[in-house]
Length: 368
Image (cartoon, rainbow, N blue to C red; front, side, top):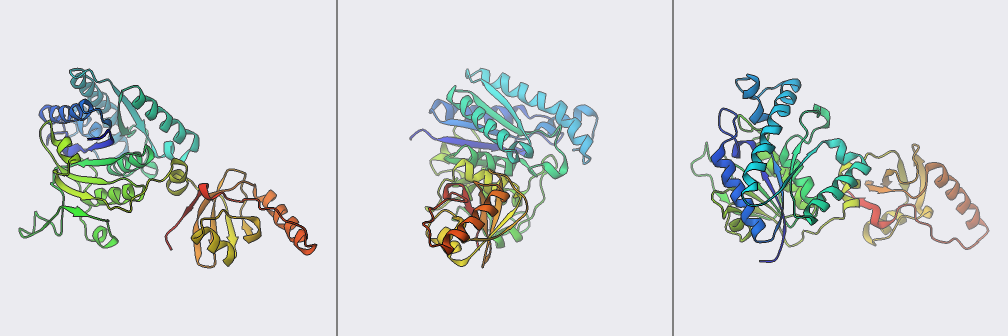
């Protein structure tokens, strides 16, 4: 099997016991499986939950805390316990783990986004195992990923993974809830996650985790849109991850032949950037950027809304509504001057060279 870049996401329920403590048997199983992938020379990025679940019992909580301060305190205690356990276990295989704690701001801030990508890339080049978790100690409700399922999806697209493996305590997806319906049918393969699937899925998680099956479907949908195939399911034993890569995993594979990778810049524009203005374009420009793969030129812009600088991200509005987002090469003031200048040049029939407002490589189309 060729060398691949694999993101493995381990949820709290797959790592801890009912008391919220790290389950050493489960931990050993995961460590041996990751070590087996590394032995096959695959690159592995581990997205591991478990910090809050591992820490809350040490603080005297009878169950996972529901307040922000409780979760943050539990994460502060549990994260050190979690990484300490990983360091100890992986040392048996001469694997050096590196802890990376991320927040939403690390993705929305362009510079921090690039730095995170550079750091993870350097660690992989050096043969280090990145272990990523959300920085629950400082995250607030409005700036979280929601759960590590979505974090794993964003990371898998971000580092252009060949596969995202989401390990859980359920062996894949079913056409109805198998805990209620004994005739529920397991879905071994899916080409896509539809809105109907998301609407009909229970969003509840385990007692020690935050993500239920709905969060896993949302993560799978996001990863697929970023060009990454996904496996959701259960596994046990040192060869479980190898079996999943061979297509023999106990779970559901979500992929299709039309998946294509999206470059890191476009991912940031599509998923993490905040638009600072709007550009309105005519029908000719709309057709050029939507159907002909062209860059947006000043000739097609007839209205500008908001104030933005060169390098900012703006929304592009056409006759069909919102067309997409892109990084502008001019400030709003410069663009207004350029549009006026070109209008005068057209009156005199002067030659007007093509100057791009948004280059096609820094443009992301929305589905319309």
